[in-house]
Image (cartoon, rainbow, N blue to C red; front, side, top):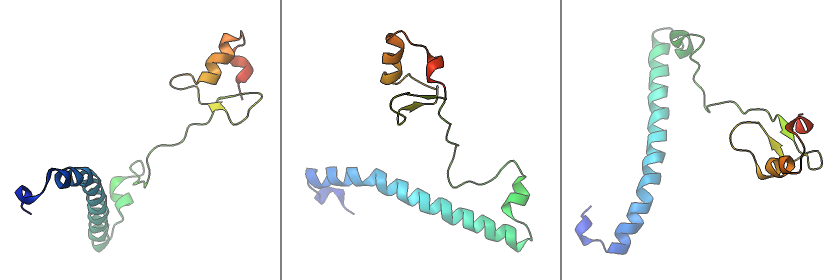
Length: 105
């Protein structure tokens, strides 16, 4: 592709599309490599999990969701894990003179 023939608008459009396309292709490539490694291990009579050990499981998604530790007594949809910045509803609860102990689940 000869970039010198493209207009500035076309170049900007292309610039917007490139990061998403790179991310998509990397994801496809990772899956392909993983399948190749699985096939290789299987051809030798092993599963990847056997080779990596019990602690090194291959996961589709990373991380576990943390359970909520605090809940608003009047609106059960408002929850907080107790990690990170306090939500505004917790801040207003504390500003009213109440304690976090009243919000424990």
